Image: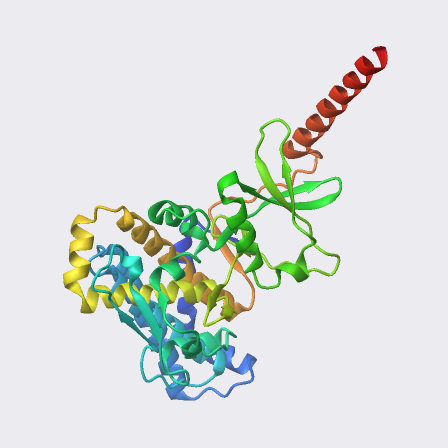
Length: 368
């Protein structure tokens, strides 16, 4: 992870992206990738990034009545410019590659249904291929907006609370460095233990990456958790949330197939559904914005914030071919004097207390 200091991460992120509105920078990037740089392609790329920036700026100041529409069009321009930069040519797009269906009886906005279209030149498929994601989404049937929102780690807790689900698609990991090596833990409550095991079974590559999952309990606090230990040849299949915490993401079973859609596409598809609602179904959207009684509006607003912040970052990561993070934390000297972490102290205390109790039990039994 390349961390860049910034007192205004969002502005500096866009300043980096807007480098691709200058002819010299576009030519340099394309030539480095082995592509010829013609005027039409250069103008298309520059125009896409410029328009994306204007849409994003407008979305930041707009309220929820129209902000999804502005942010979707901004993301469309941004990802189109990204796709053309990566391919070195103008990708032909005939439509969005998606359409929505609004059920007559809809308890939540998340009940909105999404169907994928045009696998060759639909916008979502063009962007997906540019990101290296090649499945034909039209072969997986219809989806609900909720399925995509469920796959976004940054709103995981809010999603579970809003829709009253025990376990969704996200399992946040707590990482501990112990004398025996790195240990990953997933804390759980008794009522969602089985749901969590089912979630892990739908994480692509889980069995190849991890040894058999074991359950454990903290001696002092009583908290229960799963212990995840990597196989010697197991790959790190975790992803990282905006906060920096790693997580595992389960896929969805659609038409008897397991599919895991990349995080950036989950956000982009969700934006399309929300944008379509506010553009073509104002009779549904406006009452939701003005007088929502479910709390779902708070979830959507939080999603909008993270989409505005993260989609440009994902796009930049793909263009630079490395993860970049803008942070307001200043440089500090690496401290190696604290050799034992708090979690290690806790584990040492737990082992010591347990050992002492066992010793006392044995002593009492021997005296008898």
